[in-house]
Image (cartoon, rainbow, N blue to C red; front, side, top):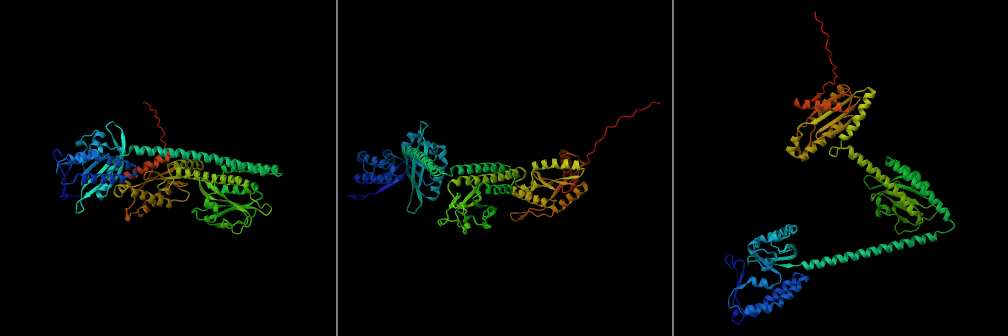
Amino acid sequence: MCTSAGPARIYAALSTGGATSGTIMLYASFDYKLVVLSIALALFLAYAALDSAVSAIAMRTLWSIPRWWRKLRRTPDRAELSFSLLGDAVPAILWTARADGSVDFISDKLYRYTGFSRERAIDWGWMAAIHPDDLAICQSKWEHSIRHGEPIEVEYRIRGADGSNRWFLVKGNPVRNPQGKIVRWIGTCIDIEDQRHTQQILEQQIKERTEELAEANTRLQAEMWEKDVARREFDEQNEKMLQDLTARSQRATMLAQMGELLQSCMSKDEIFAAALGFAPKIFPTRRGFIALLNAGRDLAEIAGQWHDCQPIVSFEPSSCWALRTGKPHLVVAGDTTAPCAHAAGVTNTYLCVPILAQGEALGILHFQATDENPALVDSELSLKTTFAGQVGLSVANIRLREALRSQSIKDPLTGLYNRRYLEEMMEKETRRAVRAEQGLGVMMLDLDHLKKFNDTYGHDAGDAVLREAASFLLKSVRAEDIMCRFGGEEFVVILPVADLKTTQARAERIRSRLRELSVMHQGQSLGTITVSVGVAELPQHGTSQKELLEAADAALYRAKREGRDRVAVAASHLVVEPVLPTEVKLP
């Protein structure tokens, strides 16, 4: 910017103390007209670039130019032009900050809105006016901008003096010296509460309109479905109506009977055996088979067939459109649009219905038309889908029952039976042993110094020791023995038909061989693992679950008191008869 006297010399100095602290002062020899025009254009471009929603603010700023002009004309040459004067003229809140982000100037608009004094708001005090829910993101973005020297743009709520909160859009840019170092930050704070409120109203209106359209679409679909059902019912009114209705009734009755039977099945084998038995009765004019996905879900294997369907033994799930889409897939004879690869040799019309359980595909039901009945009409789809649904629901119930049973009796860390299962089996085994007058051995084992492993290597290492020890113990007992985790680092082994000598020998063998077990965790050996064992036997140490466990537990604690890494036998459970006083005869 130049005047007739030559280039203008403009110096900007930021006072750091005194009565003018926090004010940018401009000293210049200039043409007032060019200064006002430059300020007006700069403000216009800056506000217009912020957002289309705030461009109107820039227009209002331009209307303030005459007031600036009158103030500038009254300012003598090289006089102070306070930055706060510009801040009051701009509709937004202006602010400046030092290189470290601490604020040293804020327009009076913020003080009037928040009720804060300048001394309270300056530096970092202004953050006290930010809504608590927005404070974290404000601090995060501000720290990021300071750390990386990037412009900041963030929206947050500021609490006013009356306790209300309004949304503001804050933008700021770094000011760098010729060496590229940030020496200052400058930016604006614009009230966008009205814009956000308008946007929320618009979004709510859109949501309500969308719901209305969805409801109308639902009603339309329902009307279309009712018309379609009515049309099908009209077409089916012929001489075979009574025969078809009778056959449907019979099939529905058998389907209900199958459903009752499936609810009583205890395994998946029983379910599919029942389904394969009812399928030819419910669908006497259709060939078919049941295919199930294997455990890896990468192969569908034939579980059974009826009416000499003769399918391939197995196929990939991707070769069946029903498994790929999760919906029934009908292929009319001669139609090459989307045939299933597993039915490549089938020339008649066929239908694949997925067997679903809780949204998961378990396999398919495959139906084929015969030469005597070449058509598969849509009216059959419902019955076949219901058939598949009952099979899928029964399989899901079996899976859930097995999972719940496993969770209720298995320890999740070691995979051994838990204390609940121990109590059930202990009760059964003690009764059986007493009834058959046979022995029953009980071992209670406790890993020595497990806390040391946790304290030294961490709880993950302690868990690794428990898992490896449990695996070792499981391999060290007979198939008929019952191995359980009693709690913490304690284990219990029930040995049916084992006397005290045999139980003690097995305990000693487990103790000695466990010392040879090497447990690695994160590439390092955890050292020697030892175990203390308490041994008891029925009937010598008791004839009930409680007595045997208490005897074994007492022996275990004696083994620990005597130095650990040893086997201790429980004290005999003797019944002491009272001694009656003898009669003393006087001489």
